Length: 281
Length: 281
Image 1: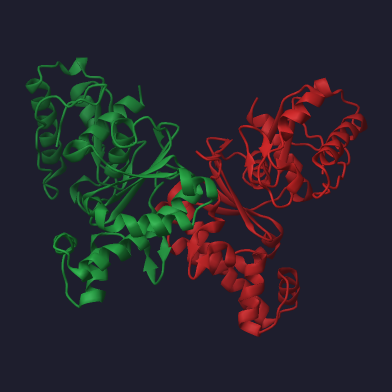
Image 2: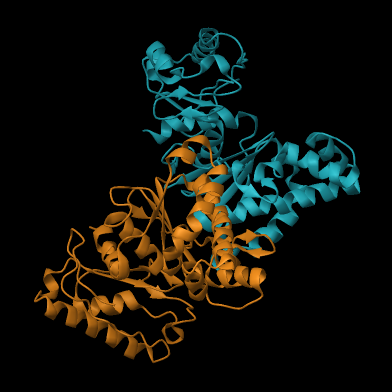
């Protein structure tokens, strides 16, 4: 999705939806991206040279510094493609690239749930788990640009992502009920008061608390923001999450560190990408 | 211990040893600290006004910003004592206070094992476990000044400190041998080739790898520095640590992130404290 955002976070008109078409040649993908930016600019009647810049949030892994897509399973034709430079050559204004989780949480820090804060940790809970670190009001990318990649951290018999992702929800539910359902189906069952589904979300909250405790103990942010499709089940997992999370913190963060829910909604992705332009002003 | 350090990390003459005397009235403790600074200055024949500042590394918890000792079990009489301001009033040069783990790892970053690096994570392994985060060449204290307090993070049936501290070593050894020994005794046994002691250190390395994997996945530093008394057993725990640690990292940090051993030796504490002055130049 492509949209125009002003410096106060306001979205102009209706954003342009564009399918990535991940398997097509890289040139086709880029041409659709360029097209969507042109459509967005003409819809709001703004010349490209009056825009401060273009931010692109992409699935990774990326080289953020180089502005290239690396070996990304969802974008096989774009391996080592210099996306940032290519788009910059077309529009002649600054272009910034970062991964989607970083953009989402950065957007929430600048304009969303954590606005006004400078030091924020965020988790995007979906098919997998993404996370992002905002320090001193900027995205912390890390020495090898893999900061926040906690999904692969050791937990029980495997890694934490086995437990705190969509597939984790399915696995917990299966262990309780013997049935295989998607996380959305388990959510819908919980909405109808199904005991096994409710217990699934309660256990999910306990597993998620492990990632949050380690992260807060290490970084000590002002707040944690939870986003992604699974965050919409927060009412089911938050009680067990909050309870276990705070047991494993030092006294000050145990009382002071907030858990917030992402609140920028369906446009959060490109609002966050637009914040890459603000970050570099 | 009090010592004078120049801008290149060189230590002048022999540092002054001073016992803290943790149970005495706060005034006595401070008077001994002031005394040791005066002795250090006169030994090297430098006027206090020619010193760039005074750095104090203390056991915590502290208010780093306020320069006060908080509710610290080892310094019961100094609760809420304004140590930084009191020393500054005596010497009329800038005084900085931070916790001992932060100072130690910061010193290693400026002058020790990680010199030349800007983004470093460090662990001090002793009776308990301390840790510190250096980002962009400065100590990262966190929103509530508890950044790096990973000791209380959830692990197995308790917290990670139960496994990766001196008492953790004793506990592992006891589970293997039925005997109660200190970590130093288990170290000495390992030096003599004792199988249970060697296995203890190997298991210790695996537990430690959990803390390192989580921390590297989150922060993505250039290197990790291991210090503290237990780091001297590195030859026994490093093989299992290295092996398990890298299994739980993304591809780039798995090959690029270094594990280093602190190398400033017995003066590391006050060299690190002196670096607080450098940090604020």
